[in-house]
Image (tube, rainbow, N blue to C red; front, side, top):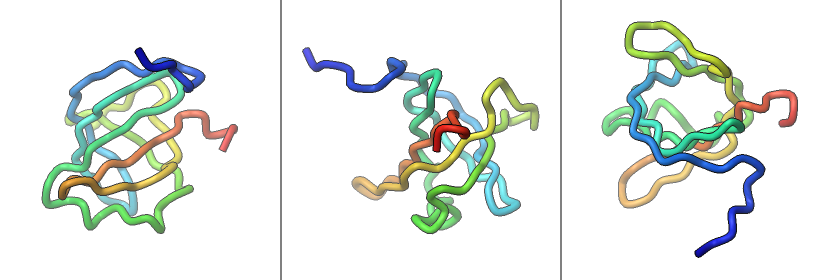
Length: 97
């Protein structure tokens, strides 16, 4: 069993949301979520809308109906690609970044 090194434990989820960035809605699936952040997978065909140059930018998450939820503002910590899939790590602790 591995030791959790994060401040807040992550919960595995599969939630479809939009990441609002560069005046665009980027559809994502939230893969894991905690009080401090989230890991999202960018929907296929939308990976070019988020680049490593977006690291450090403030973004927000919205539900499909356009409503937001608690801690919807986030900072992009990193963008990675794995096996043709793009993942974005987000921090909800904007004052900490």
